[in-house]
Image (tube, rainbow, N blue to C red; front, side, top):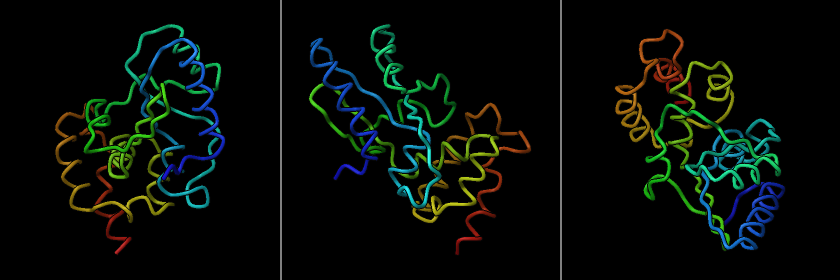
Length: 171
């Protein structure tokens, strides 16, 4: 079942039609607020109007096409790495004829929030049920794996340092 916000789904359909007319195919990974809405619903996750994605294309036309529809290409996302976000074990795929939208699972989404020092991400972890819906063992395993690669792992404000407290407040 496609749980995308109706407006987001329409935009992806329009991009798909553009790609089809050019006989091009593309794959994007949904991240950010719309991924939160996808997993938790519009009532639970803060309303966001932007659509953030990552991809590995350097096709100028494709990048302009995304921008034309208000889709923001996020340049840098430290962790989880792109390869893990696109691994079939970590995401589901919404397929249009010429566009694939990869939807990272809820643990990958939580990791993306835990591996930053941004207060907005910490607030999302504290004020939503994001962590409650995660597989706790898998989440901890992923954090243990990724923190070895984090350039911010020693930063006092990195969100994964608050994971134990956040989880204890849930149960």
